[in-house]
Structures are given as structure tokens and as C-alpha cells.
Amino acid sequence: MATGRLLCPFFGTYAQDFMTKLLVGLSLLTAMAAVPAAQAQRLGERIEVGAFGQFTKLDDKVRIDNVAGIGAHAGLSVYKWLGVEGDIQVGSTKANRAPNEDITYRPLRGLATLTVPFVPSKKAALVLGAGYVNSVYAGRSTANEYEDGITGLVGLKLCSSGRWGARIDGILDNNPSPNEQNFDGTSRNLGLRAGVTYALRGGCASIEQFDWALKIDPATATMARGSNRQFALSAADMKARPIELRKVMTLTCASSDASVATVDNSAKVTAVKYGTATITCKGIVKKIERSASSTVTVPPPAWTLTLTPTSGATDVGKSLSLSAKAVDADNVDLGAITWSSANASVASVSTGTVTCNAAGTTAVTAAKTAYGSSQSKSATVECTAVAAARVALDETLFDFDKAIVLKTGMDTLKVVLDAMKRMPTLRISVEGHTDWYGDDAYNNTLAKSRAAAVMATMLKLAGPDAASIKDRIVSSSFGEQCIIAPNGDADPGPPRPRVSKANKAAQAPNRRVEIWQLMDGKGAPTACRSADERAGHVPFGDLK
Image (cartoon, rainbow, N blue to C red):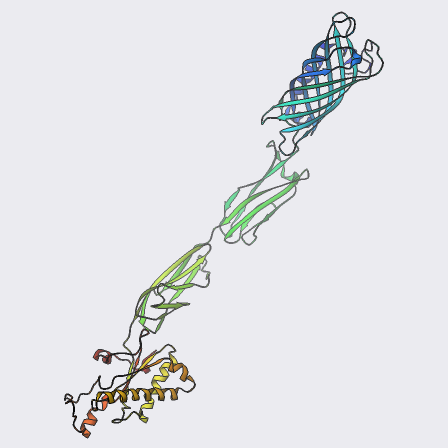
């Protein structure tokens, strides 16, 4: 019998004895489980046990029938994915040789293993192993037979979210030594087993690679502009065991926006101005780089918007000024103001200058957006309609029955032209009139001729501005409809008496052309001017 020929010294000469091997295996497992945590970390992180059922096809040279049995195994990780494990199984079968007796098949294995997790889930792993096997064939009537050899294993491990897992292995036992039957050559036993595993320490899958995390505290912070704050940095491995910062290589910190907040490599943060910045620190441990970030918010300073005055009034066609300013708590001017009018047809505004366009009341608003917030202030503006400007050609009355502008009237027309040049939007109405002498048709023609004569004279005086002036003049005539100097007597009707010098002089105010300012886009008048209009007229020279 070739007892113990290839057994390792650990088992001694009694390695063939099942009880001895079992006791040794249990003692080893007990010692592994009793290893302090710190020691286990040096050996690895995983200690597991398991149970399985196995079917083995024995080599025909052994002359024993195939066998099905049960077994147990224990394993220990040594370094990362490397480990060792041992297993023992028991199964009953029969010898197919004389004596034809019952045989107990008890293989004992010790293997070095490589466990490779399937990335990234690590819920499954490929297990490869190789090592020593001692196969015992125990009969009732004969001494135990055994074979020493080498074994190889290929397995698949499937893991739950906890400590439990399932495992399927294919095993090849290669036994080069002869058994008690002294057959020549090598026997090869092929086995297939399936079972469950339980991790006494660590997880079901293979040993996790080293990893670590960097933490910065606080994760979010609000800082006043100009203030400093020391943020806390810490590091730990995946088991929450602290890592000294001095062991973190190339530890650096940076700000996503240094105009908002700056940071040094110790995570001391300085708030510079309003805004938000991300502070990121990173370092390397065992060639693994990790980072941590914190969001720093610098709130905007308080600021105010002022508007003066808060109300105002002026005449249509005139302007008034509003003043607005936005400053922060440091009295820093925040820049340009946005202006708007609630009704631009009443009053328009540009950079604080309000222009009245029509009679009415509207709100003019100054607005500003700064530091992420908006403010606005409004002023009430009242635009007042003024009486139409009127110039009666009192000094340039037309001669009786004539439509020629007298030389003395040129100064009056020059005043009107000057106003039109100063005010590009000024529009006027030229209105011709006569006294009551003559019939209506004749007087209508004469009044029209007088209005035309005034327009022609004005355009001549305007020179190069004539084209723009002409577009702003409308003309109309009323004949004798609008008598302002009745001479105390009613029109006697036809046949009218011969006109005396006294009557001609008395009727001189009726021989006229009136010039009026057109308000609010109106056209030529269709009726005589009222007494109130005449009483409230403003000379053209006073227009602004």
C-alpha cells in the first residue's frame, strides 16, 4: 500500500485516516474564524463555509462504481482575489471487482483559489483552483485504499445581496500514485458538484479591491462676502476606517469660480463676491484618485432703488426730468436704469427725460435688476393740454379786397417759422378770412387766396427748410363766416351800400389770416374759433 507517499508533512503519516483529517480541517476552520479583525484584514476580508452535493465519475482503473455524495468546504481569502480552501466529501458506492463489497469514497482536498468577480455587479464570480487531493476508498473487509494526487477546479459563484451564495464546480482529481490493487498508470476522477456558501466574514463574492472616499464638510455653505471659513476634510476606506490626510497624496483644492470664492489646499474658503461656486478637493491613495465637492453661495448685498420726484406735471409738448439711482449697501452705484411708460402716447421717457405727447396721466417706471433680484419705482406724470398758439396778423392786415401780404407782416411770419424750426413736431393751420363786403362766393375765393399768399411767403422765407415746413402746414378758408369786428351794425344784406373809408377801417380786423398750432394730430378746422380759444392763445414766440 502506498500510504502517505505524496502527503504533505502537515498531515503526517496518518493522513489516510478520515477522523484525523476531519479534526484537522475543523481545527483550521476554527482558527480562521477566531482571527482578530485586524489580522483578517491582512489575510483578506472573506471567510466562508459551504455544503454541497457531488457526483463523481471514478476512473475505470479504480474498479469502483461512480458515486454520489455530500460534502462541506471552507475558504479564506489571502490577498485580494487569491485564497485557499479545503473540502471533504463522503459518498457510498460498490466495488466492481472481488470482493464485491460496499465502498465509502472520501476525498479530501486543499486548494489555492483565484476568485474573479464579474464587473461591475460582483454578484457573480468565476472560481479557479488547484491543489492536493487524497482520495480514500474504505471497504468493510479490506484495509482502506487511498490515492494521492493533484486536483483542479473550475466553478461559478452566484451571490445574493447578503452573505449567502450558490456555487457550481467541476473538479478533476488526477491521481498518479497506484492504489492497493497495484495497477499501473494514472487514475482520473471527474466530479460535478453544486451547493451553497455562507460568508462568516466579508461578502459572498471575492475580495473587493481597496477603495476610499474623500469628504468635505459642509457639503453646502452660505458665506458673507469677504468672510473666511475653514472647511473640514476627512478620508476613509470603504469600511469607514479613517485614513490620515497625511497619507493622501497630491491633496489639492480648487474653486469653479475664483471670482466668487477662492480656496487653498487646506480647504480654507474665502468669499469674494456674490454668486455660487463649487469647491472641489481631490487626492490619491494607493494610486486611486477620489474627490469631494461643496457648494458655496455668497448672497447678494442689500441694495436700494430711489426715484425722484415721485410725481410731476407739465404741458403737452414739454418735458420734465426724473432721476433714479440704484446703490448697494457699500454705496456702489449699480449702473444704468431701465425706464418705461405705462402709456407712451401720453408721455414717453428716455433716460429719465419724460416728454408729454398728449393730455392725460400715466405712470413712468424706473427699474433695475442687480445681484439676482429686481426693484422698480414709479412716478405719476400729468400732461396738461395748453391753449393753441395763435398769431393773428394784426400788424399785417390785408388791404381792402387784396390778397398780398404786407411788408409789415414779415416779422410775424418769421416768428412762426422760428418756432417750427425749434420744434420739429409743430404743426400749424393757416386760416384765411375776409370782411362782410362782397358776396359769399367772392369772399370765399378771396379768403383762400389770402391763406395761399401767407403759405407761399412762409415757404420763401424758410429757404432750404421749405420742404419739411410745407408738410407741417394745413390751409383752410372761411370767407366772411368768422367776423370779429362787426362795426356795431348787422350786415344789411344785398344790395350792400358803398363802403366808406370809416367802414373800411372798422372792418380791417376781418381782413386777416390767422395761424394756429394744431394739437393732438388734428387737421384743419371746420368751424370758426371760439372766444375762449382766442382768449387763451399763446404767442408762437413763447412755445417751448
